[in-house]
Image (cartoon, rainbow, N blue to C red; front, side, top):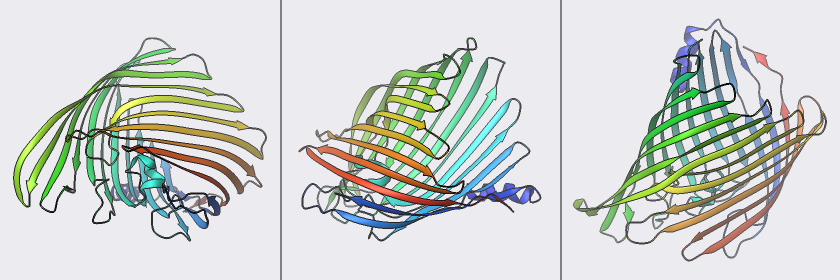
Length: 392
């Protein structure tokens, strides 16, 4: 992705590039930053924040390359306060009848902070690489066709005796057809296929191990209702099936394959309201998704977000997410996990370039069997300086 962006930049070196840096400092307190069930202690941390978005915008092409990260005094990646380093890239191309988007990411962060408590319930370093692309073509004034695909690979720095997470590669693709009935109503037909492949053996004994795989297909119908300028409803509903395989080995020798099917109704619904001062978003969904376990997980999610702009200097936000993952296992044990995160935020725009953000956070997770409940309460303050756009 970065190579593609560099190529575009070479073709249009005379066009406007710009950078808008952001730097800051963050202080936080957490009652259980490692999300440990027993013998946990509270910690305080200080971290530096860096965000360097480099952008290009001209002639129907938009490019953003964004290095960003967090460097704190915490050690390793086992904490909610862990360091992270991301390199994000996005390129968009637009004409009267077509549009295309390509995205990419390289990341090193914590499985707790960015994957939630669903990723095995332990905090370890997570190395991620991903890319996605979509192409949309306007067939008529009322209908359009879209095709999208994605690839991502996740690797965890697990201890030698850990078996709760697997490194994996996930590839998915599918078309979407949309037809606008009128100004307010749109229908969709959405199809998709995916392949999930574990990359490290699931060690049961010193000699026996297994490699797992899930191949999935789905079909959904969608409905979009734009009630007015402020309210919008988006819904989808359908069916998904995944064929799960587990190949058993004795040392380097293949022994046998176990197969099973995973059937699931899938759906999503989101309601959005955009006003001058208040913005609201609520959504629920169920889908087969990768979460770092042996196969695709049936992931059920509910989210709620609200923002209130009181004045030019003050605005407030609340964001909440609840997730439940059902993780099948061909050996007869279904592991499950629940995760929730609630964040209350108050932003004070001290000046046009200085921002002070205050956060109160509640993180909780439940995993098992046997069932274990873990929670952490946090408060943090971020002071961020945004510099003016600088043309290159």
